Amino acid sequence: MGSISASWKYTDAGVLAVDVVIPETSDLKRAARKIYSMEYSTEVERFEQLLHELVLVPSVYFFGDAAPIHSAAVATADGTMLLAGTGGVGKSSAVLAFRKQKDIGFIADDISIVSANGQVFGNMAWPKIYGYNCVGNEMARELLRGRSLADQLHFHVKNRLNPSRVRRKLAPDRLYDSVVPDGKPLNTLFYLFREDVPNMALTQLPVESAVEMSIAVMESEYGVFHRHLNWEEYNSFGGNRTPILTMAQVRDKWRAIYRSAFSKAEIIKVGIPLDIDHARYQSEIVKIVTR
Image 1 (cartoon, rainbow, N blue to C red):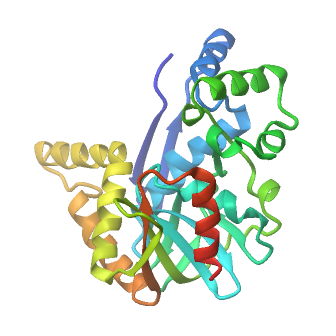
Image 2: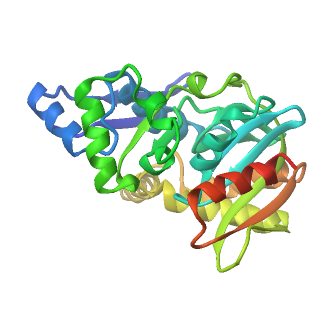
């Protein structure tokens, strides 16, 4: 099976064009991929993921007035709350903990889009639910409703072996009464941060610290695409042409957009104990956000 490939270029009319090539896969290979996958995704979910990861988020790199940020986003009556941080820090778990709060709406699960004027937008990605989110509650039943017997068996077996290595995606409108795809103004930025503290702790975070942390996380979490930009710059020098985009340009743009967007928001670092129980974390993060 060949690899999925994507390319970006500006047309003569100045329009950004994205080409994605998805090779055909045999039924046997698709079945094998599902067995080893942690997601056991449907074809619709897989297409949504490809659209998100290979088209929407990378395309935002080329926009002059918007930038991606590694964060979940929820809507409140006052605007948007971003929950930023590294992978595995608790963003998706927080999104699931908020689903029963009637005054909170879903915007984004993992990567949000922010504009220079402080607007936050969704990203077409479905919320991720790991096995450990389903221990001791009704989440597994809701998650597996309508799925095939093979899908359910795959989930239960892998969940018993290691809950952190099995996950599913669920359409936002099955989790939340309200889904806000058009975005709302940024009101609060919570930076989730694992550290050696006995209890959840809140401290103010300077704008510049939040800006640099956001750049560092995006460079780490989206490193695959960044390597493509580095190779584009390398090949451009060798071919005596101007690169379509460089990482230096990306960083400069992000700093300007983050700085502008964050300046309009309250920025709070949420210190999270390294060994906090998952259920306790969800309970505490709800109290913090709905304070």
